[in-house]
Length: 325
Image 1 (cartoon, rainbow, N blue to C red):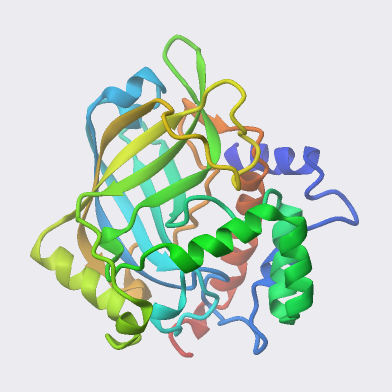
Image 2 (image 1 turned 90 degrees about the horizontal axis):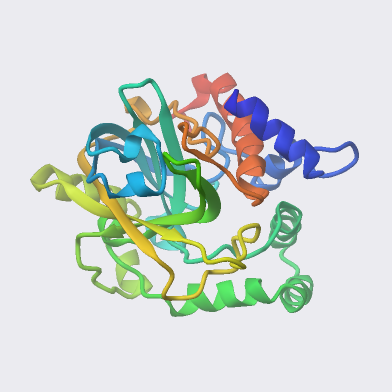
């Protein structure tokens, strides 16, 4: 039902209409010059699995009737990753780190979310994102400069990549769900929201050149060692939009001072290699949502859902190649 709703939304938004952008085109655009890494996710291809739990404190129930916000502990399967189509890329080469989770509740429902460390997205629409992928692949500095001039948020994103501090651990990152969703409370009232995971660990800045010296897989090694010693934790903070805040454009952050609700703590207490880990075959489709959460007018979740499905189908059909490259 969720997938059908997402596809319908994408179609009515014009994203899948004939002659226009398709999820296959988007997935193809991620491929590096030598072709995709067979058997792997087409983006955020390098990652490591974890399991743990979400401990809801009950406060989120004022915003959503979803069971996941009722006080209790719910199992989590997740994945630490970063933005690259190359599963062998050195860990110090990708600026954007990712955190994907699937939370399950006893009523048989799931909440899937894929968050990133960036505070906002570089572009406003799926069409702009596809254009950006094509320009980056072409490596034409003048075309990219012209794109940045026509898309001011891309320039702002570039400034963030240059100025934001790097850290040496997945556990020290803040992860943001940049897309807007609608929470519906027990009384039927809707709330436009975004959410973030705030690390319990204190971020320790480290220059990128210093991180490069730690080895090509230092992020995976560090998080495995850290969680073997003690669980890693993040606070789930839900930000509620004010009237007039943009909900359809993930490139526009909401102003500071918006109401926030701390809904609980996400805990990662075991790390496993992806090759035989529990996250390997999970499609972290952001439109897989429990009752009490639904998509907003933001077109990206539907676009991501469609592209993720293509990526999932391709990599599962290529399963025999996984780990062979």
